[in-house]
Image (cartoon, rainbow, N blue to C red; front, top):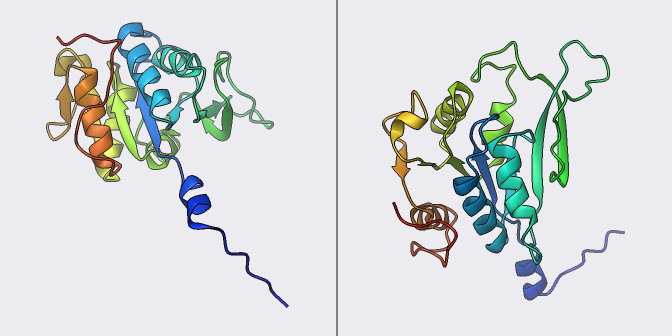
Length: 203
């Protein structure tokens, strides 16, 4: 005999899935000012943060997120493995120290283009509810291209579009955290107004 348990409406509401915000950017240059402001804001909103789990922007945004003491969300890192390693160990630097939940994959760090089926970028983008792109190189551009392919809302926080070479024309680019906040909140159904942001001045 099967017994179904009915939860009160307030409990169901409380346990509603937290949005996952994917932040993509350079694996070398941390872009501390931008990444720090974005990471802090995501944590303050109670969302999960998703990155590729490595260095550069990935570490900078995760560090800022983890520094928010009353955060509710997790730092999720989708990790590559060492190519041809039967145990699928992670390369040096993965995961960075701020990753709470490591998603270990069999997919190599190099040897495949960013949009190849052997790239973990597909997992990064498909897991995110909204993608925020910070300055980066071809890898970042490929994640933005996949966001377009998979119809994930994507916004680029850059001083100018050349900071992500190959940034698709249809991707919105902004220069302030307030604009990022408005974009994210609109696309996860929490309104269109900018949140209290701080930490990043208008440019």
